[in-house]
Amino acid sequence: MQLTEISERLQLAMDTSAAGTWELHLPSMHFYLDSHNHDICFAGPDRFDNTYSSFIALIHPDDHFMVDQHFRTAINAKTDIDISCRFVNATGQAHFAHIRGRLVDTSVPASPRFIGIIWDITEKKLLEEKAEELRIDRQREITAAALHAEENERKRISEMLHDSVSQLLYGIKLQLSEKDYAEAIAKANKLLDTVIQETRNISFQLAPSMLADFGLAATVNELCRRLSTPHVQIDANVSGFSAPGELFLEETIFRIIQELVNNCMKHSGASHIHISVKKNKLIEILVTDNGKGFKYEKLDKPPKGAGLISIRNRLALYNGKLDISSAPGKGTTVRVQLAVG
Image: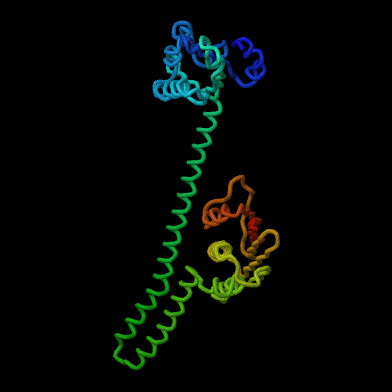
């Protein structure tokens, strides 16, 4: 079958895919390109004289050796050619191309040749490079968000230790310096009880062991009890988690709730916070407060700041969604959905 016959069969493919045919006659090492490939390979008359060596010279210098070795291996081993490379013109402009070919007419000693197609894959390669850049940028954002969340957590722990435990220990030291030792020891004992309680509270917030022992419902209720104050009442309703389940999932849910409640207590000015967790086909988390609210407009991208960065990272693990409903003077409701199972 001649090159012209191949071109006729593949004319439709060439018209729609920016592809062209080629032929390498092995006895003479003459290399033939059709008009499509003259454009793809920048094969002007001053650069290409229908020889294998001039064809290889059209290839980007960084790809020369690789392509030549691939062709020579295919010729010697009588295997197919399947390779991607770059072709470059005299001014340095490059096209990405994919070369495929196979050996034909091996039964006739005088006319064995490779025939094949070259596709222009420049647009595909540029899109792949852009996608890779976006992937790297996204990974950098995730890493930065994780580090930011970690630093915020360290700062929060530091503040808790300074504002509670450190101050209480300093108070104990002052009490023990009093001359009335009996009264000083009594007061110090009371402060030590408070230190112990504060330490337990911090430990619970960092890693609640009861999550593994008693499950999510008990742990969320305990969180409500510990965080409620005379000024802020917190309650919860958890359904679908009757027994301890998958620990990592329940830790994720607990951390999301913990972060949302912390945001409410810091920013909303609410006197009541309600937590609802339901597990059916999806897991739905609702955290509602009666605070001052704010003007919220739905954004294409997840919101940043106010502790929501760490929530966004956790949502990504379960194809989760986050929705915020709020208005000035009408409180705020945050709805989180997690896809599981």
